[in-house]
Length: 141
Length: 107
Image 1: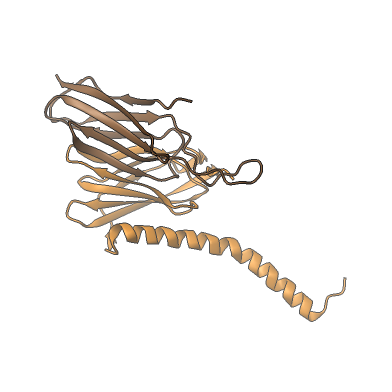
Image 2: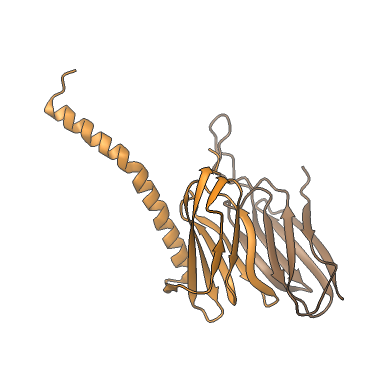
């Protein structure tokens, strides 16, 4: 097959675009997650602190991944899955009689970081993240 | 399939001490991401809100998104000072509300 210089360049360009696409997709999802967290915190700085996110290191089935979050004294905790098509997972608000911890099961589309952000009683925010390897994704499609 | 919530609450607890409450409701939690055989998107239908109130006072409220698994499960800890009823409420995307409640005694 004989290719002119122009055709070769065009092909190369197309190949680069194709390889870059998934990367820019993933980037967009992470940006989304950052935007969602910013919306929750109202743009306030998020520090480190007494917040615990317990998740399996490897989840065989992304359809139901157990999650445990605990942040003593937190008024609410938000959970974000950075690699999901819709990164929001949940926001839990705790009343005076509840301890600030919650266990649940969530869906993860693939291997990704899960972030828990807690709003403390004094209005400050702390976060913790955990990387979860997912063998089979859980979003169908 | 009838949607039936299941909750596990101790019958009696010590005043001021944390105890565990487990809840599960059978629900498909259709995420809105899946497609049927013809390639049409299956519309989203999830439980979008879970609440627990003790004697009318809010214990926990969870805003739920599609990323929560089928048959949403929540486990939390709470304490009470006096006996009463713990009421649970799940709100569906279609507006249906599923409710159940359990009495808790001090003992």
